[in-house]
Length: 241
Image (cartoon, rainbow, N blue to C red; front, side, top):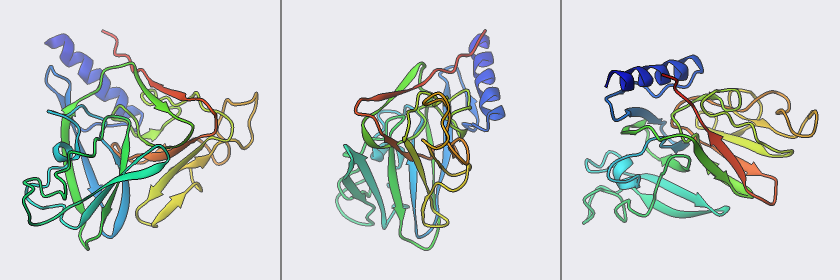
């Protein structure tokens, strides 16, 4: 138990120094929690970098039993198109308060969805689960992918020792969505950036203005894979004894 506790402390320490923090991680089961905020009248790309119980469906990660997500919508994305849309409802036969029960949207670690808060007040959530085991691989298919770090990480997604997204290619893109300004951005390092400008040796660095970054744990982004084959984003944080 002590060895496990020390390992978890080391993980939290590295996450903190890399601006990647999963809040407090505790217990021998590597259990952690993340806090999510969905601003009023805004869209937010969110992800759940935890393995939840009994599953990672919307019903589990954002249970609407108290109807706190009334008038909210969650949009899933796969294969280059938006798929399932879940609507938070205040009444009806669904005990979760989601239009179809929330079981048709799954937020496994590494995947992401849009959350639309149509109300005038911010909504929030605390998600509890186990930190995924490593190495963890997120497959980025050709074209658009709505994703996030499989592990609870934030900050620079390339130089961060946790996320370590380094096997990118020319003319790949990272787009984050800024709820405050209400649009996509590739203007600043803190939000997103363009890959393919100013390369040296083919594909070994991001272009101006710098590496892409996400501001908080649990927030995702669009990744455009410009290749015709899959790219593998491998996260392999190692805690030494």
